[in-house]
Amino acid sequence: MSLPTQPRTWKRDNFLVSTDKRFLSIAAINGAFQQDLIYWANAVPDEILQQIIDSSFCFGLYRKINTASNENTSGLNSGDSVSPPSDNLEQIGFARLITDNITFAYITDLYVLPEYQGFGLGGWIIDCLDEVLEPLPYLRWAMLRTSMLKSQESYEKRLGMEVLKSGSIADGPVMMGKRGRAGRA
Image (cartoon, rainbow, N blue to C red; front, side, top):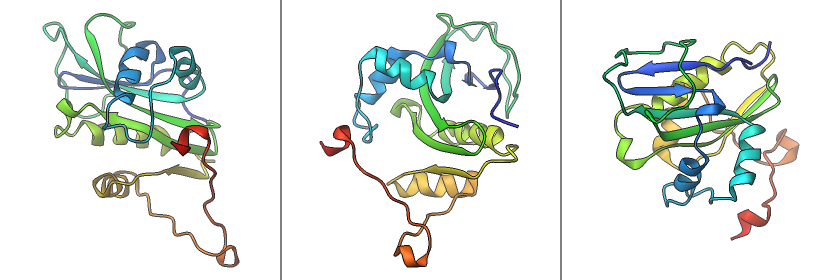
């Protein structure tokens, strides 16, 4: 069993979370990456961001602009069909998994634009992530890195994550990394 191959969609009030990559806006994501709120990333050329998206399992968070014809729902409603991208969706958040689709998932680039924070939308994306990851029988690790206490608490509460202690190799595995050129700035 692996991550879903068909897009998943969740609706809540005037918002939508979807794994359908056709909905993603390169301009919106790069625009967010240019803001100080995304302290871990910078905007990249559009074609590079497209490659990143193509190689990842992505979640987009959208505000429905034309809500007159949309139903208001609450909670998670996975599997609902939504028409292809149109002018009635504004991308206001994002998250992605770097993954082999079966045994490992690294959660990264999760954000909600500042003007939409405080409405539980970040927690909702995390819940959607959990709904996708939880049934994977061969998942070895779901990992992420955060430097914000509020985020740490949300990941602990919503995903059951724990801070990985690192020490001597004599004590067992250690988390290791190397900064690339973009991480040296």
